[in-house]
Structures are given as structure tokens and as C-alpha cells.
Image 1 (cartoon, rainbow, N blue to C red):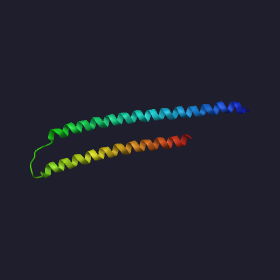
Image 2: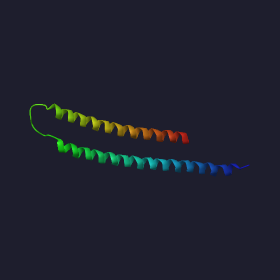
Image 3: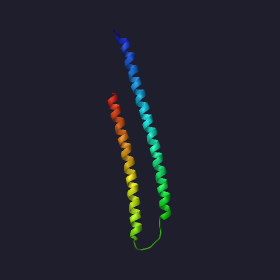
Image 4: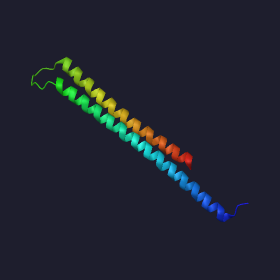
Length: 104
């Protein structure tokens, strides 16, 4: 049988292993999040540069429906992109929390 003195270092080692595993998972998720964030920023920059090419800054008093539709579509794409990014970040955070709870 193992003595209580022997069990204390084993449980401390298990706790250290759990902590180490959690920190490794956390670091991996943070790297993945940073990569996704970088990719999103690059995509936004490409979209922005493409949209600047066809932007019309005329001071005409009437509304051109074609231009309005383009602007609304661009707004919708940007909004969708932002929402998807936030949802992805929240889902990753929730999955990390679930794993943390399961590890305990």
C-alpha cells in the first residue's frame, strides 16, 4: 500500500500535468485565434481595397439604386464577417471552458 506521503506528490504531479495540458491547449487555441484574426484582417484589407476602386464619391442629389445596392451588400458582408468572427471566438472560448471543467 502507498503511504499518504507518497500520494501527495502523485496528486501534485497529476495536478501539474493537468495544468500543463490545459496551458498547452490554451496556447494552441490562442495561436489558432491569432492566425484566424490575421487571415480575417487580410481579407478585410483586400475587400476594402477592392471596394475603394469602385466607390463613387459624387455629390449628386439623387440616389442611384445600383450604388445603394452595392453599398448595402458590402455592409451586409462586413456585418456577417464581424458576427462570424465573434461567434467563432465565443464558441472557442466556450469549448475551452467546457474542457477546463471536464479536466477538473
